[in-house]
Amino acid sequence: RVILRRLLLSNDMKPNENLFQFFAGQSIDKFDQFDARYLSNLAYAYALIDYVPEFDDGSDLFDHIAMKAVDIIAEFNAQDMSNITWAYATVKKPHPVLFEAMGDQVVAREHLEEFDPQALSNIVWAYATSGVPHPSLFEKVANYIVESKSLDRFKPQTVANTVWAYATAQVSHPKLFQKVADAAIQREREFSNSQHVANLLWANAAMGIVDKQLFLSFVPTAAKLINTYNNQGLANIAWAYAVAGVDAPTLFNAHFINKCVAKEDGFE
Image (cartoon, rainbow, N blue to C red; front, side, top):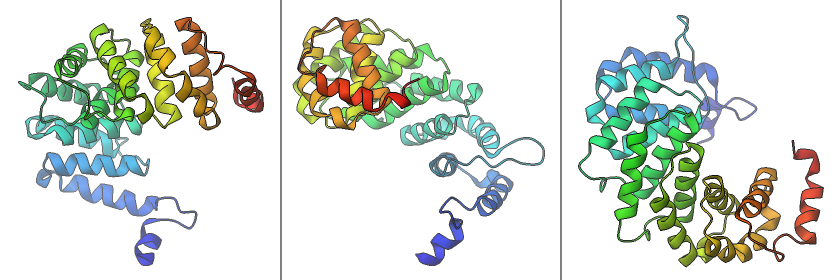
């Protein structure tokens, strides 16, 4: 394990770029042997280390992966589509042709049962983060979630990231937000991550969907997590409750103000 770590990582514990550059060059030379799973895993791996190898002709690894992926688009299963779109969004490499093709593949599915909740959330998150529109994709995913008997399989992070994606992409789907709000209220105690809470409430406020019961239900949880919010989280929580017009004195108290004051240098 130590030998492998020294091989893959430089002295500052960052990826050994020379080695990963070599891997990238060797990979594209063998793309004719790559199927959808290999391509999605390759993109996912480089996204995890946040490295996009560039080549002498001005192209990069993700350009080549996209071209190959579009050629074999029908081979991608649910997890492959989730992984590859997440990877491109993570390295900030929006590729409209690839994203259009991937979105069309999701929409063409008769149903979305093969997609687990995390995969669906990752896909819409990727499109929203990349700023690549695909209205029919968002409609398909939203309708599937709304028509689901329950959201018990959706973890708090998945629920929050899904509505965050719709709000960020400015895709309105009131029935989706209502379905998510009802599930979140019932499972409010499961939300133990401040970012998930902030994303959930911000998304509703950003879309002008004010479910008073949702905001009131999350006051105790939002207050309990006050020490774990980053600057953006504090700002989003305050803004969301202000837009919703929900009075929450047990949340916005002296402790909240002190946390903001302590972080004032980090606010833009």
